[in-house]
Length: 587
Image 1 (cartoon, rainbow, N blue to C red):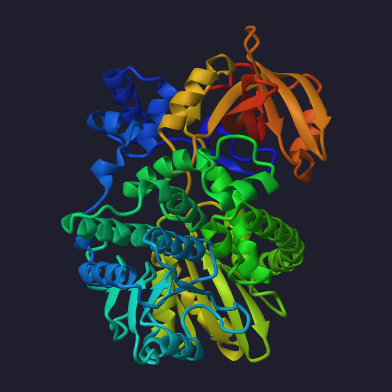
Image 2: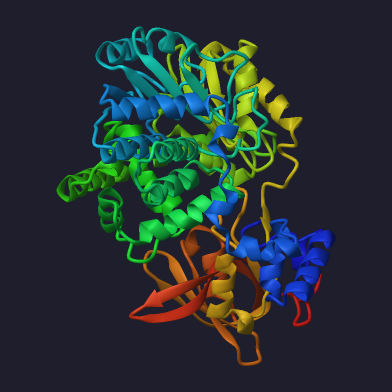
């Protein structure tokens, strides 16, 4: 049933509100806690019960951090890494080229440096070497090092790890494991098949952080003091958000604490990158995922693979500024490459149909560094898992992104075991694959069937979910601060979105390059400023500009706008629908 009767908004979407049970839970929370009803609607949607509310709104990492030794092989991994650092052994860190890999590597490099030692960083080239350890690289590293630590990779790298003769190998990963593990000293991975899955939502940096926590415990047992791990949570927060790990449980506490650490501007690389990105406010989860993350990723996508990790690990301000400038330029180039592939992929997917359980596209010469981002765009457009593949003759390499509740990594892994993929793996929300071109259609058809069995494609492609109704006069800075307490928001915990029913437009002004500034009123004197970015990329711009006094239902997210020292509330407008009559603000 559509919310506020909006079956098709100005952007063609159906609005979906909370179900009866969620409404009932929100009312119970409001009565038990005396918190604002909009906040209770968000808490109810997130599944927070009344007794849990105080701890949820003020999460403490010490209460939520699991015992690192609950993960298999953690004792061996931590002991070996600590031994190598204290004995000044030759250590190499082999990492993936994305943000999670770079942040995981930087965590280890930073910790080892604070222990008075140094380690070699190795990140494979996306084009030449592909994802994860490869035999030539591991053979070379093993000749010159005593310990190789693979972070955000390695769980499925049986042959490359076997090639590391003469060196111990430790794997700290989170990607889905196979039936057998590589023959090495330790594989710490909450997604090993012999784990219970309680920590399956950790990203690789979260696993590395737990390993360093265990190293710290071992140091304390020996009467020694280790590096300040709390000061490293900025890296864990960055990786958790950028890798689309669900923001629940310990992940939420890690990100929340990490954002506070980042606000202190103590890490040279993140300070330089924030400055080059013109980030002039305290960082939020949004900034990690959409401002900093893409720039760090740019090196691995279309430039030099190790730039992001080097930026995050450096303590030299001048080096950080140079790396940040270079990554910013690469990110601009990446956007241009991405846009060309995105346009072609969307056209192909639309021709194939956007209502299937899987949306996919493949093209000759599509840059493998942007197919993951384009898959994200397709997923956002359709509310379905999406896969985008760059073909190179007889072979294609692609990336997939999933929606909440659909485990893409497990399905990709199954396709690989069935022989329909040359290689494939990942985690619930993201996965990578290599496929023979002549198997492409069969592989995608099989993947679509597997995802359909998990419920993919059942939701409408154009659904817009709202937490409830809100009147303009209730949109205060105090409410925004309260809503922030229920954050941070991201994967698995989307930010609050409210519908403002039957509002009238005071002024509408075009600003910037196609944005709209609006004033919304309830007819009783209360007003709320709003902004609609890229309004003219959809029917919103024309309809709201030429409103002729019509009233509208509006949907969007509340945010604080800080300008010249003033702090005001505004609505980031996402959608609108004509209000047919003044009394239509009911379901």
